[in-house]
Structure formats: structure tokens, C-alpha cells
Image (cartoon, rainbow, N blue to C red; front, top):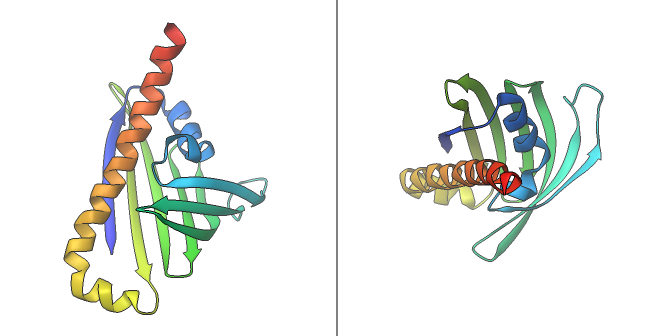
Length: 151
């Protein structure tokens, strides 16, 4: 299943790139833990553990950074018990700040393969909705940080 979402954030590209990649727990609506296991000098190959929680279900993933082109592109692979995720974030400067686009591919394992096959179109829409919700929250957190600092 593929998902894609995009949002424009009224902040500089360097700040958006850094916050998106280094403060996931602070903006994500599903990630509750993000722990670096082994960091490499150029970030590609860095391993980490990611724990998500959604609809009362807690999932643990082992992750690795697969692409790091600061401040324009970052990508990760997450391996879990029931499914794997490949996610890439693309950052571009706009006249109002930064556009962030997330593209992800979810690969089910075991019985979930059947569920994805039968309900893939519906799950694809839900995946896109979830990705958009995540990016909308990223925008809200980053733009409200600026407002809170001014008060």
C-alpha cells in the first residue's frame, strides 16, 4: 500500500528538516518512542527503535536511515512484526516557507497480506488520511512554537 501527503509550513527549510527528523515524538500523533541505537557520522545506516500507538494498539519497529541529504531528503525503513514501512520525506523551499511531502510504502506480512489484498483500496485511503494528519500536526507544532516564543 502506498500513501502520500504534503503540507506547507511557514518556517525555514533547515528548521523544518531538523524538527521533522530529530523530534518525531514531539510532533507525531502515533510515534510514542524513538530511540537511536547506533548513529553513523553521515546518518545513513543509523539504526533506531520506533514505537507507535494507534487505536489502542502498540507496535514496535526496528528502523534504519536509508537516505540523508540535509535539508532536502530523508528516508527510513521500519521493520515490524506485522508489516514493514518505507518512508521518505522531501523538503522544498517555497515563497511561504517549506513544503514537506511524505511518501510511504507499507508492506504487510502474514495474514495482513490477505487483508491488504481484499481491502487495499480502503486501507490506502486511510493510510493517506493518517499521513496527512501527521503532517498537519507537524505544521501546527512548528508554527505554534514560533507564536509561543513571541508571547
